[in-house]
Image (cartoon, rainbow, N blue to C red; front, top):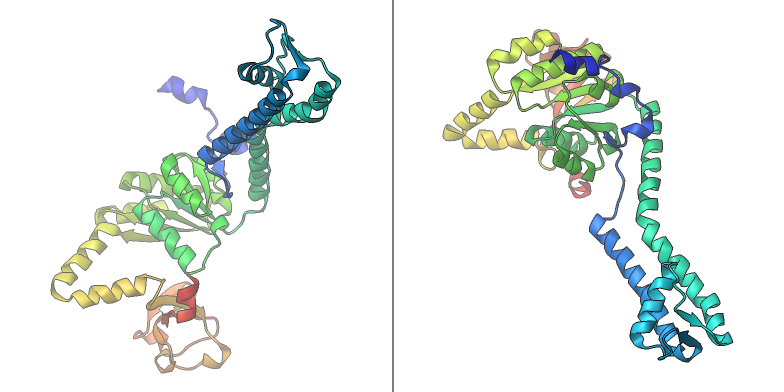
Length: 361
């Protein structure tokens, strides 16, 4: 164990690496063609060029000479086209008439160039894509601010991202997903999210994800001990970020609070309560699901207080107000502090998703 840590004495080495070396860690959202389609297109292009060259040589076979002296057959034409386009050129079959040489200059040579471009196209594209990725990473790392980092793209992480995108809280390219599972990152990348490959328990990985400049960090780890370690690391890097953590067991809530979590959601107990409620009053569960689902129906939203509403009671507003936020504290609508609305308050209310919004989602 000692020798292992000696190899990596600096915990933030990864964050200090040049941008071009992070292309295997950070993936910026891009629209790409599937690898099989790209390979199929190149193979088809190469075969078309080869077939055209074979046809031209075979139709003008009288203008070519073979070292064997037995004429140029279709197989000879295929052989000549292959070695010619690949620039091998053994010289055993060569154009001898002026017409054949002219056709080689005007047609075969451009086909040879096209054939070579097709063959090396994949390598060139990979190198070009790496350069573009490095440039995008450099630009993103320079400008990214007030973004959301989601640690873990399992069921909970996906639901959190879906809510952020559904409520139009964040643009996809301002959400960073950190996960050690490449298949999960591929799914996140398909949504247009920025992805970082690695374990979020490492401070260098969180630095690469821009946690020190993030507005919020959502910790949706599969294990409670991992969630505690990620929260500790994230809080050390981002003292002012809003950290929300999902935990399985209620007994670990105080550990996460002490680790720096602003809010802790107990996934197992919350699901258990809903299951218990569903046995006696299932419609209550339906209503809770409706409020938590932003795509349609009703949704819980937050808005600023309008100047005309200051001084009044939240109970008299047209909106169904559940509570208000004042000075960073939440007060339910039935609490004495919520009797009168003050300037600067924010209201939590039940919002109805209009048909137009529902159609745009």
